[in-house]
Structures are given as structure tokens and as C-alpha cells.
Length: 123
Image (tube, rainbow, N blue to C red; front, side, top):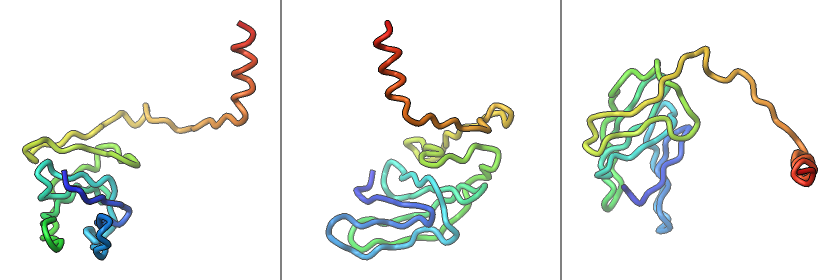
């Protein structure tokens, strides 16, 4: 894995502490960047497309052409790690769920620690 970090909504290479300039990787935003195991290719998601870009990370960063790898619109878009790439870079693991099984509500419980302490003490 490359020693560089990648941040998205627009995929950008964040330089190591040497303070090299930031280099924009994606053109139309992107989420969930994943490096290939050899560090020569970066994959990320833009909407329903899985995009690949060749990247040279030794010396000055060189970004190659971007190209669509797969239509991933049928697979769930997550917030962090949406997919993974096999060691050979030719297969992808994505999550697909039934739309009816996806959560539609999130309950946030405030001040729960006091209630927890009372219930544990009651045992």
C-alpha cells in the first residue's frame, strides 16, 4: 500500500510530511478510495461508477488517465469503505442489500449513561 493518504469527496492525494503540493485525482468528486495492492492504481466511486486511475507515487506524483471499471449502481454506497480490490486488482468485493432491508430511521438516545448505571446497579 502506498504511504500516501487519500481524502474524498474530491479525491485528492494528501502528501506525507514532506509538504509536497496536493494533487487532485478525481475530476467529478468521488468516495471510498482504495489503493491497489501494488500502489500503482487508485480506485474510487463516482455515483454509480467505479473509476480507476493509474498513479505513479515514486518521485513526483504522476496521475494517468481515468477510466470507468464497472457500473456499481446496484451496490450500496457507503460513507467510508464501500468496496475492496483483490490482490491482483482484477476482482472487486461490493455489498449489495435488499432495498427493503436498509434502515430508514436512526434513533439517537441522549444521556443514556445514567440510565445504564441505574440498570446495572439494580442487578
